[in-house]
Image 1 (cartoon, rainbow, N blue to C red):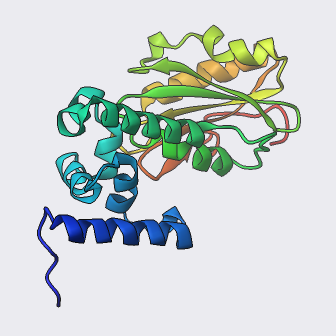
Image 2 (cartoon, rainbow, N blue to C red; image 1 turned 180 degrees about the vertical axis):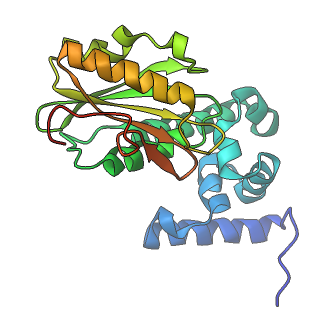
Length: 232
């Protein structure tokens, strides 16, 4: 086995490595590159690969790097590069949340798989509302709560505001568990019951309440916490 070259590399070797990374990018696309190689493209400069590797090591991989504050990144790469990295990760988050034209929801898994990348690694709870028309096409999505979703903190009007404004037919509520375990809590069940009852009064169907963990999710409809008044 050939031992890996120590870091930092000789400038000439590092330049050659950067050229190979660029060639691989041009030929095979970004998916062909390792994490440190992709990050090196963002970091830029004369010898970006050692910097990228140190960043991934310091912040425990891509996940930690994506959550790192600007000040912490700036201490390693300077404010300009740090701002570029923060901006790149923010664009990635927004891309994960973007709604394709008239995305149609056929099963709860459609929404879970769509929102999982953006919500699975959050260190706080968020409650999002996905608003649907009568054909179950997504017309809007909103984050309505951030923080601890205790039963007393959830205001029904905020959850249904966008659906009522758009005269929508239905919605799906989604929130995450930072622990990574999607098992619904007693508070989750209580909130679901209150929201389902409000939906019946407002004539906006609560199709489901999804709880997202780290790669896993639970449907409160499947668990019997929601009784539908229309086929779904």
